[in-house]
Image (cartoon, rainbow over all chains, first blue to last red):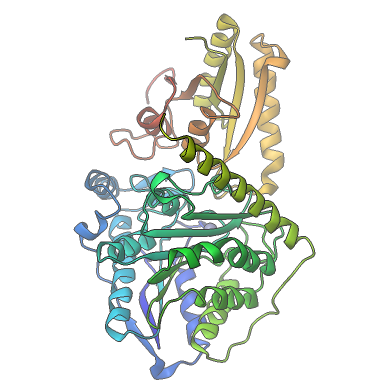
Length: 346
Length: 138
Ligand SMILES: [Zn+2]
């Protein structure tokens, strides 16, 4: 069973010529249609998320400021990030769609949820909109689960590092954050040596990979670097920041993934899900509409066991070395954190 | 405190040029090094290299005209939004002791702090910050 959170295409949050556009959600929905799931799909439309749920992540002062900024006409929040008078409400509906999808999974205790909504969220910090993102939907979803005593794994396979999500849970022992991303690239964070704060050491796993990275590099990165961390952590829920801008046709980055690679990634992540009904994916980036459509179909088709058409998975001889570089840097960072701990406060 | 390295945000705008000129003068007086920090945002692509090179050239010419020894000025391209890029300049490896930005962000109608690099920096900087005003408000 597929639970679709949304769809929230937010046509009122739009700027002509900007790649983060309503058609992205329509493309994702077309990918779902391609699977012909018939009665095996249920749509849960998102209401605007309540302010007290948003406040699990975003300080009320920031929410008021952002609402007022949009209300006064909107404008540029940074050189990449626009807003319109309706953008705050649109972003609230994205978060609401995520929460509704998770709630539905809890009732069903089965199936997979996909939140087909925009604007995206993983760059949004607790108190700052950036990188096309206003509110961090996956973070609010995770924080809501944590508030109920759950342990949440977030896998972020968007081609950009999810600096917002990492920062929000940096020192939170209830959330394990795993990201594969192009390096160097916006937003400039996500080095393998970033491993989490004092109370959550090793609960941030970054797999930075060079331009041209193929699907096997991301899979191996998740398997080899995140796998042991996931086993040690024991998640009760798995959320995915599912950007599709790592696809080779994406105009904003330089990874070389095919749609079939996303199916492989989905399979890897599915292996981390502790029991049925505990996996929700959130649309993040992805700016080539055909790539989004094909990749969404491959991802969800794989997870649901539905037939799908996909491009062949990709691999490259350099992948092993790329992953090894990240692993070595992570190991060094863990060792020096352990040394610091042994030395103690004095 | 000794100011050894001054980082100035540079995107080629009038505000950034004013900020750079201020930073050059200050560097001359203090004997400090200059780092011109250029941020490449989410919309920026690696194929923007030519534009970035042009910016670098004009900035280097400006520094020369201001009497900065070429060995004391460097150009630094940073991935990220301008605020984060400049904040990072305060950390190793750049380790700037002073940040300089133009007051004019990409958003002119002030009143709300959101959307203005200088406001964001003022709130978050961990090293001293100079905000260089534009010559006149409009
Ligand atoms: Zn992205």
